[in-house]
Each structure stands twice: as structure tokens, then as C-alpha cells.
Image 1 (cartoon, helix red, strand yellow):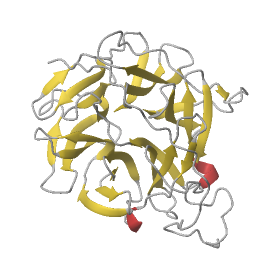
Image 2: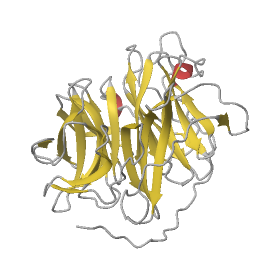
Image 3: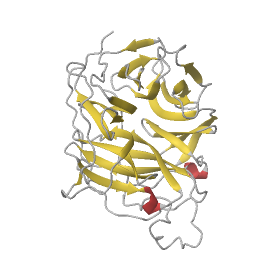
Length: 374
């Protein structure tokens, strides 16, 4: 089997800058000692200050766990525009107060469903336009990734990859995106043509019935898998092709012209190890598919030195800028921030978790866009 896609020129309308408009913004749980009519001081609010008057797609999504029991689990959202400094913060999602406290993984099923998964808890599908629960199912694994996929009849589904705590992926469970029917569970090294060192999965940008998997032990940086026929397609195989690359997470999407694949990982052959974001953009499956050299935050957009050294925990493509990606940067022990990273090494910090609330933890990123496929 071989995928071939002619380069399709699809005009992406660049989003206009979002004017500040805080009308109607409410926080599900109010921090004790604050007046809801007065903006709380930095470090005591539950989400980034809303700066969008409206919230057009595409969105950057971030699953946020509540470790302190004050804010509740959330999904933070930003509406993105086609500039490195172009974004605004939307009203966060909390499933009308029914979000799990520890939503680790987040994904999106077009046109408007955000899905989160929490360890030994629930998978919850949320109507992003109304912030209400569409459906929920119990979940027994530690979730790793949430991704959109169709079944072999074309029915929209959502996949949730799970592992035992601290291990690699063992199970992928598929749910009807509309909540109908029973979940379908498939296991690696058995039901699926995958081994025991798969660390991350994503939707495939080439075919909506397939998903894309990363084997972090180096067998393949990306392989497309059809869970309905048990085919594995390794061209483009995105082989590491370079000694010392150790990749941890993967995310794939299609931006209207380019098939984008982004990894977060490290160079284990260097001392000290260096951490970075690796990305490929292709119009088809032809050409050099080796994972490129990494990008990392070296300076701010104004050219001044970046203030921290990042360990990149997860990354996604910037859906409007082929020159940028967006990542979770962990620094100073356990502090985390979201950064928009340009290929030149320039970085913009979009959110710093401790500046919002010390009891929150940014866990995973996702993209919400009209489609992930041609």
C-alpha cells in the first residue's frame, strides 16, 4: 500500500487579532478570598486571563490537572493567528463542572468535540461550543494520547492510548465520537502490529482510518497503522537515521498544504543531554524522511537570551505557521510553561503555570482545527 497525495493548495484564512473582551467569563471554582468581579492577582487565578472576543479555530489546547483541589481539571484554549505573537486566550473548558480533576491527555474530533482522558477515571467528550458533556466512559489505564480517527466504514471515532503507570503503551481504546455503542479495545503486540516500546500515538495526517505511532527505542520514529485491517505502513517511515536521537512524543496534523509531524525528545549522545523539538513538513511521502536536527528556545523574539533551559515534554505543529511549533517546556525542576518556538530558535512564552496558579499542572497539548486530513 502506498499513499500519494498531490500537493493541494488550500488557502488558510489568517485569523485577525482577537480584541480583549472579558464579558461573560466565569471560573468554575472561585479561589477563596477573591472577589469574582475583580481580577485575582497573579498566581491565584485558575486559568489565563481571557483576551478573545470570540474564539475562532484553530485552537491550541492544553490539558491542565488540578493538584491542589481549588480549580478543578480544565482544558485551556488559545485561538491562533498566523503570526508568532498572534494568539488570544479563550474561555477555558471544564465540562460544566464535570471535568476530571486530573485530565492528562486531550484531543479533538472535528467539528467541535474536545476529548480528555484521566488515569483510572474517565474519558469525557465535551461539546466545545457549549462546554457540556456529550458522553463519558470509565477508563482504567494511564492515558498517554487522544486522537481522531475513522473506523473502516467512515464513522468518526476517537482513540485513547493507555499504559500502565510509567510504562509504554499497551492498549488503544476506540470510542464512537457521538458516544454510540461499546468501546473497542486493541492491544499492542497482539491485536495491533506494534511492539512493546511504543511511547506515543497521534492521528495520521495521510488517512483518517489510520493512526501514527512512535517507537521510542528507535525501530521507527513514525509508522502509520490501520487498526481495522492490522496493516502497518512505514513509508514515510520517518526513521531516526541519526545516532543518539531519543524521541518521546509524536503529534501529526495536516494544515491544508503540508503534512506535519512533530516530536519532543533529546540527544542522548551528548553530555550533557540536550532537549529539543523535531519536526518535518512534507507535501507528500517523497524525499528525505530522516528526523531533522532539533529546535529549542535560545532567545526571545526580540533577540534577548531566553531565560530558562527547557526539557520539552510534548509538542504540536503550529497549524498556521510552517516555521513554528508549540511545546510544553519544563524547567527549574517541575515548573512548566507553553512556548511557541520558531525554527530560528526564537521563543514566545504563551503561559507559565505558576504565574496562573501554583496548584495546576500543564500535562499535554492538542490542536483543534477543521480537519486533520486532506
